[in-house]
Image (cartoon, rainbow, N blue to C red; front, side):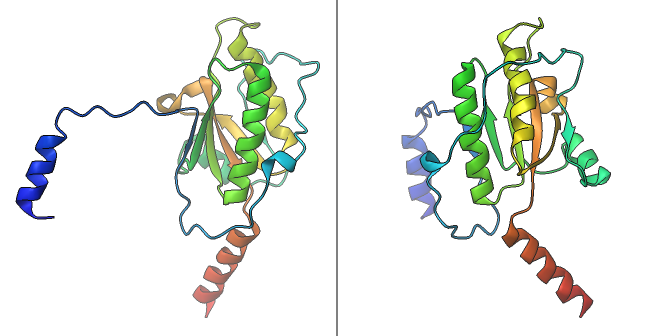
Length: 187
């Protein structure tokens, strides 16, 4: 583009307003994205349930660590040091839609080989508020995914106790990449 073409374009676009976008789900392209075998999410059985629920006290943080996960990994997750590759907003969403969106979101993230997610669920000021109900379900649902290795409250600038970081297990492709990288170093 020639310099005068650029200035003409910028002048023409000066008063253009961006369209509003759906902010419920945000994906960032995975580094070294590979062609993955397509997975039909509608054929997967959503195993998340909305039955009886123990309400998580507001003072209790939304946190979980699967056995065998290194403390350093969880600490880096807690400090927000991993790049967030995708986010899901469940704000003001009915519980059934939260269940469906979360299931699709985690399955898609796993399929894409993503490792670090953020889920915005909101925070209620009362124990029986909708945000705390969703938060309590989220605490139960996330532990039901084998791919979820850990989750914890987000840093204040990412939503604090109204959001959580989620760490997924490494895909077999990522494990192979790691092995190959370490094998090259030892040669």
